[in-house]
Length: 322
Image 1 (cartoon, rainbow, N blue to C red):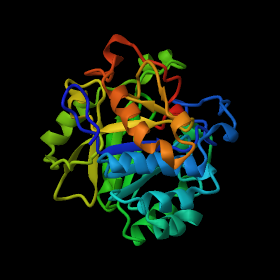
Image 2 (image 1 turned 135 degrees about the vertical axis):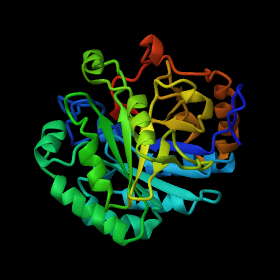
Image 3 (image 1 turned 120 degrees about the horizontal axis):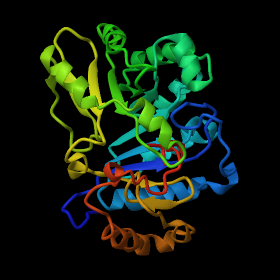
């Protein structure tokens, strides 16, 4: 299994399939997407080789992310590629839900085993204000369909001061909805440093409130992401907290990232990406690529630099899919 100098082992790959996104979320792309065209991103055969290389080196879980992955016409095929790769046990997808209702059956049939969905507010007007789209009702119908297909569903909400920091409304929804609602702290990015200062809420405050109200920690899975999860006997759903500014956040890191342009990123907020694309052109280069990745991992640092306001090369979250 891929490992670094600090004894961390990497069983989880976040694989971006596009940087393009059709939403204009205030914390990510408030002015809309203006990055590379679709032709700049990894082809299906290149993505297949990435999957095989990581699976052969101990990766058990692949998350397809973006940008917005459903903007790729071949997304169902990519899900099938991941789910049929020997060694891969779980295939997850992160999406904004724009195509969820009409596509979830195809994604599930292709082998999807977990759905992560960005819903930053349960109020239609507020959702529209955050994302630029009046799609909340349609997206929630897609959630119902995913649950009907027995897919585990996680809802991601970036928790922002004076925007959607209404814990009570989210808790009320969790009473009857069997999903995991994950609050994510606003993270500073290169494009919007002022947004962080205005809207950041330390989720350690929310954690203390949950514990006082009887929420209990969930035992962490080996291939779990960075969230601390909690359950309560009176609620159908769970809560997860992603707190990148918390102490020791990076000590349990188990994930690597490959960007839509084929660069290995050792951290969401790292200083550089390592170009893998030259080794993705034919199957004969796969063994060499394993060594290239392991060599790159010797440069992975113990922690990110967010506490020092160092956001690395991450200009916005669509660049690497969070």
